[in-house]
Amino acid sequence: MKNQIPKYLTIKQQANKSSEANMYIDGEIVTDEWYDSDTSAAGFRDALKDLGDVKTINLHINSPGGSVFEGIAITNMLKQHSAHVNVYVDGVAASIASVIAMCGDAIFMPSNSMLMIHNPWTMAVGNANELRKQADDLDQIAKASIATYLAKAGDKLDEETLKELLDNETWLTAQEAVNYGLADEVIGANAAAASLNKKFAQRYRNVPKQLISEEASKPQVDNERQQILKNSQARADALAEQLKNLKEAY
Image (cartoon, rainbow, N blue to C red; front, side, top):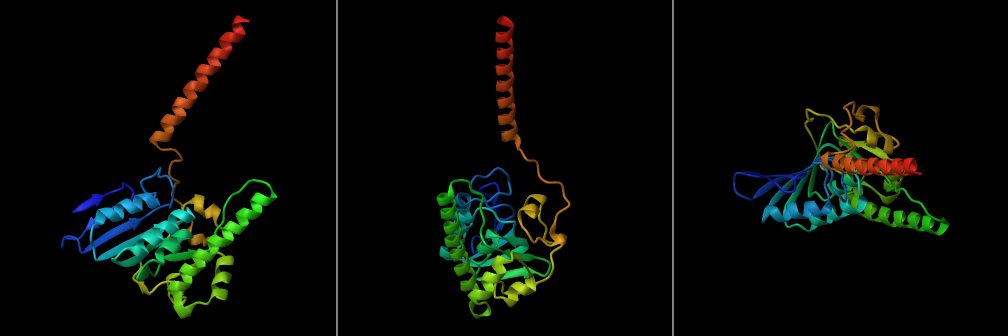
């Protein structure tokens, strides 16, 4: 049986009627969903409820990251769930997606997948006091991520080394992730290797060249946005016509 609730999170119940379920995070971690691949904390929560009483969740991740707080919420939901969670990094788990991956009781990485860890960042405007607060907030967020990585890594990774990896925006191969305790097992390569679209390739500093996707970026507006733009343009055209008529009248 295949169910899809919500649209961007695919759930497949196994034939044995509920003991195991596969879930997929295949795109950006967001607050508001615009694309089928987007995943939000609210949507993930609803999907978990829809699973019912399963004993095993196989979570497949291929995500460039996104919203820190949405990702932390998803991570905590999975940690609190009674099921055994197997995480499979199908292509790439970057930024907050790598934090979500740490929720796994077991983490599996194909030999051609990658895990990227870095310090959180944001875009901010404001006066000096407001910008200092933004920096302090980022430090607090970083502490939460550090605690999550170290909890998974155990004695394979110390805090000093981890902070250095975060400072350098480190792209770990599957074997390197295992060596640092951030994954448990390297498995056979996937047919499709890890890749990033141009949006995220430009956002991150040290993206390996082989990960930059040559595929055309997805459209910047979907049908709903296109309709909003059309409506806005129609109002602008109407206003321009009214102004033209007023000028002609005077």
